Amino acid sequence: MAKMSAINKNNRRMKLSDKFYKKRLKLKKIVMDKKLSLEERFKAQQKLSKLPRNSAKVRVMNRCQITGRPHGVYRKLKISRIALRQLGLEGKIPGMVKSSW
Image 1 (cartoon, rainbow, N blue to C red):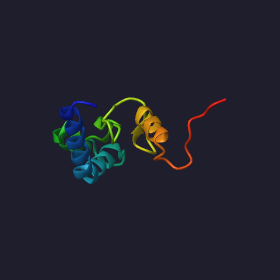
Image 2: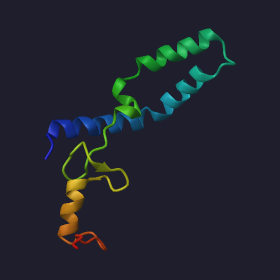
Image 3: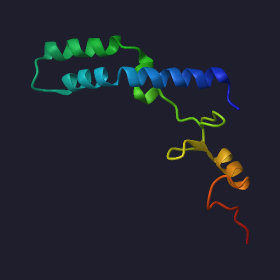
């Protein structure tokens, strides 16, 4: 099990990124628009840098929903490889069986 502080920190980052998503998108669009004046783009860049760092989507870590493990996480299932194997062995995932030959 991962440290609860790491899990909580990641959850805060998720909430912040959801909260500021539209605002960041709007400001990034202004910054990337070459048709606008350099002064407008610079002001938008300054506003973007004033936003909290943790509101950026790239700072959110993919973590296992069961154990909180940060590595070896399947994006589609949001479960780590270890938790997936354990659930498969317990028979909780339909159609998944341990291979043997």
